[in-house]
Length: 187
Image 1 (cartoon, rainbow, N blue to C red):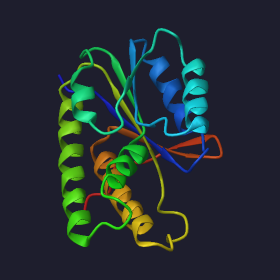
Image 2: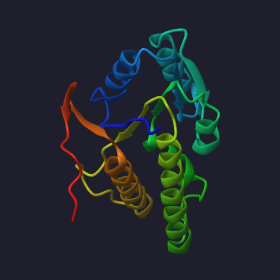
Image 3: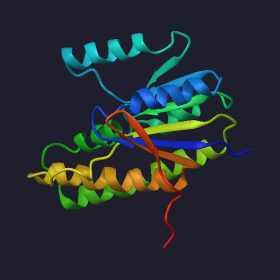
């Protein structure tokens, strides 16, 4: 049985996570929260703790900063999966290459990420419960002035497109308001 894949995107502090959490709570299913933010400093640790306290205590949190497939596989089929967020997953993976990756390394990572996203979406299709995937929209801002920033923006934009095309529903969050997006355009 194929389950729903819902995609939630928007800029920083647009309300994406709150909206996705509202969607997850509305399913009436157990929720497993796949978290990709790594606690690299005191500010991030405090942010993670604040977010955990805001979620219902019965929601299970799985730390998944790099290996989404294994984490996703470990979730019971009938639960709602809330993956927050692809933006950090892409950045976590990109930063493993160091500050000055070669074009060959960047291309290899982009191919790897696309394959993993396809695998993740295939897994989501086999579940009984819905999968809610959150990601930042980074294509509406200025062009980053440095190569690693441009590589990140391009990779995340392509990953977002892959997810959006497979999603049964998608929303763009702007200033706390959700705009449901139409079905994907087919060339």
